[in-house]
Image 1: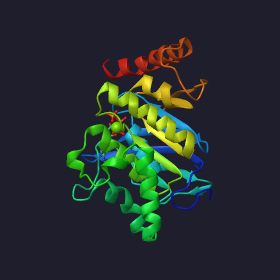
Image 2 (image 1 turned 120 degrees about the vertical axis):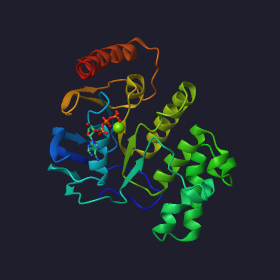
Image 3 (image 1 turned 30 degrees about the horizontal axis):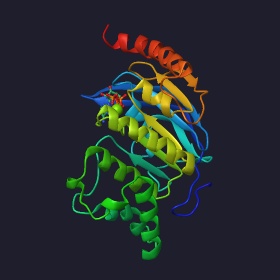
Image 4 (image 1 turned 180 degrees about the vertical axis):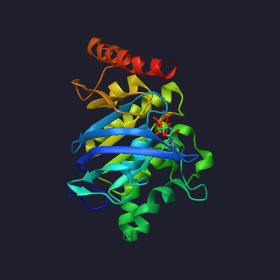
Amino acid sequence: MSTVGVGGAGGARVQIEGVHKSFTLDGRSAPALIDISLEVQTGELLCLLGPSGCGKSTLLNIVAGFLPPTGGRVLVDGSPITGPGPERGVVFQEYVLFPWLTVAQNIEFGPRLMGVPAARCREITARYLEMVGLSEHATKFPVQLSGGMKQRVAIARALANSPSIVLMDEPFGALDAQTREVMQEELSRIQRVEHKTIVFVTHSIREAVYLADRVVVMTSSPGRIKEVFPIKLPETRNRFAPEFTHYESEITRVVKEEVAKVHE
Ligand SMILES: Nc1ncnc2c1ncn2[C@@H]1O[C@H](COP(=O)(O)OP(=O)(O)OP(=O)(O)O)[C@@H](O)[C@H]1O
Ligand SMILES: [Mg+2]
């Protein structure tokens, strides 16, 4: 495993091999995902796009180990997963923070649970508080924070567990447009330091082009992989560059074909 000690950097390889998922509702089985095969490279940031209901969250939950696939398997650094694991961190759209703990205590929660010595916990917490720009808010409670700040805590909390893989399901979906762009810039900066393997679900094509090494577009439900776009742009991206808008319009065209099918 390429997982390094708590508080360290580095990613892991994720292989999604022929994953199928069906859900049974009212005694009838309906497919949600069909034959998903994808390899996410160590340190890669992969964005998943697709119409509502195409199975993005289902796929992320399968990779997280929260849901078993109906067929196929997921491997992390060559080993099949059998459930959730500390090498995979998850950040959801809702800010799932413990309301009775301070910002610092929320970040420290995972390392403490893993039995990391107190002094090291404080070090890790200080590091990630600084990384997400919340050092001055360490003693506040979640209720005192804005949406963007809460999501920064959620990201810091996921990173404090030193996962090699971070799974993010529309993490900036509830934020206003300006805060969202700031958060994208922060994540991109953090990723240049941490080199995690990230699978990032979004509905925003601009967000995907800004963040991703590759963008995967899924078909409408049941979800299959429709097209994969490697984003060959510099690490620091300019949302107004012609190359950026070119990717944006190309991917928009492909996503729209699928969204149109949902409304047929
Ligand atoms: N626990 C479940 N039981 C039954 N059906 C489910 C369950 N979870 C998801 N589904 C179905 O699987 C399909 C994919 O859902 P999923 O939430 O993964 O889509 P999504 O791409 O994340 O959508 P959105 O963009 O709206 O978040 C949908 O048809 C959904 O109704
Ligand atoms: Mg979803």
